[in-house]
Image 1 (cartoon, rainbow, N blue to C red):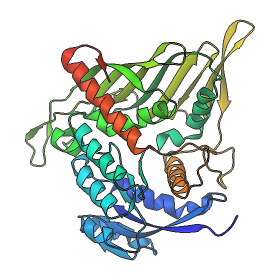
Image 2 (image 1 turned 120 degrees about the vertical axis):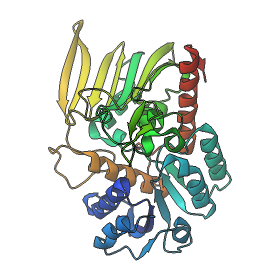
Image 3 (image 1 turned 135 degrees about the vertical axis):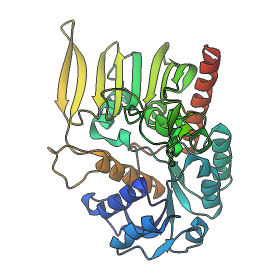
Image 4 (image 1 turned 180 degrees about the horizontal axis):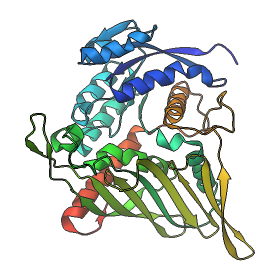
Length: 378
């Protein structure tokens, strides 16, 4: 392989995900023969304490509290932005107009209208490469399931389910935060927060919903505020969508589940699909196990295949080891930067702006469905 292209990365939002991205870039040598070498050069956060964490990274030469200063930095080629949903539109549009390539956090705007304006800005700047973050489908087991479905191994599809569920909100004494308030998180609530993860693979497989029926649950109306008083908690904690997808031969149901209150779950993404020729199921709850159903002499036989560590891009990690969240983030960035360099090939890629826009259309339809207790066409 020839000399690798160096890409200088800036992060806006030095919180949980900003630190994860910094750690992923630090682990870049684990990738084998990747065409790009990212270097983290700049970080922005309004909180100086968050910025101080990045003192441990020698390549960071710029730390600012105003994102516009980072966008003006000629030593930044690509910007990753992880901020509240209500801030997405302005920061994403400003980044695109500044000519910086962008990996944006989901949901790509607080609502459908914001997403439409972000996509319009991207369309008006065809020289800027823009993608949306969604790392969970990069787990090796998820990739194996996606390949089986894509290659037609299941035959004509009967039904499919993609879910992302945890139980962090089961504790009703948990203090209020921005993800539990519509003015910051958006009317779609948990769908904004977790939804891109459960539509990334379906949309990439061509499963665009034609009809949506939704049950949305606001289970905790109040939470404790900073001063100890009750604050309105007005976002949906759980969303269950049953969608109609028009398949090649006939329609099939696609269930999309995003839940903050699913007792028994810690932070679980799962994909299950069945067809006339077989089935496949993967869950991050069991990250090494892929369940595959075959037809053997007329019997349905579910088998377990133990997955290793390898995903979209090969790494130096031994194939027998299990993968985890940080590995999925590394793979997502590997795919993002490879596609930016025109080197992705037929590998699984990051969410496109149009796919992010479609997700907002699905969530908007879900809210209309919940309001009318009826199915809504997209």
